[in-house]
Image 1: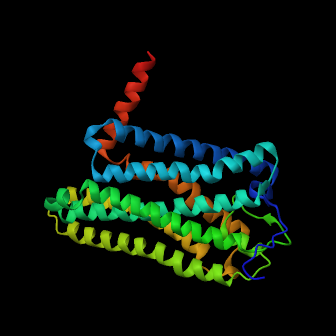
Image 2: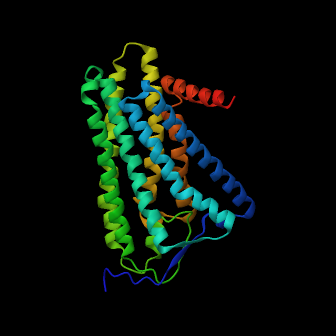
Image 3: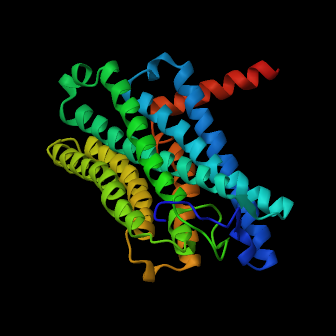
Length: 314
């Protein structure tokens, strides 16, 4: 009966923060809440600033507004459930709800992945080919890159969700995590998961690897171009900006690689939860600061938005 869902489990229990002592649970709840509010407010401010300032209607800020939108959705896929579990003391999530969460997590992880690569390519063209920037980074190309990213991300998410739906779960239904993730669910399955493991390594691996290589190549070429700049000030500014971008890239890819592309024997619930928190909560919170607050035009637009809101309340 291979390929048939023989699941006798109708719901799962997300242990989440409950594995910690009571006092630590309160602190972690507060930490999740603060980081989620910072993520939503920070990214929404970025979107508002870009949409209201005509000077920011350029490819770089078009990609940044898309990244901010994805990050809000990404955090909203996991964190509200964590907060609700703590407040309502109900750890249950339905089987269909778990699959839905897996689907959207896969979509937004891949979108973050693609957008980071597209933004790296945009910076490469701007710094290494400034005279051809407007002809290369046309509005049509920018829209095509974003739409193509959404299509590939949804197809990949659908593949992994359907592969997960075919598995049987006939025993333990406790997930030692704060959201439904692929790795802990595969451990709970009483079906053969070799196909799932293979698809994670091959399909997801390729989808993660290609943008990562694109980012590395882009920044290596940017570094070579910057080193040829005679101005020390200009060189330092470019390196500091690229360095902050690379810090986010390393944090994002480092945690994902440690979670999904390591042998299952090297995993532990505590380590997996910490790594998952880094890429699902911390990275979306940091992106507005890293990509925007170091930018003079962005800071000016944000100041303008906040001033307008303050004046309108007077």
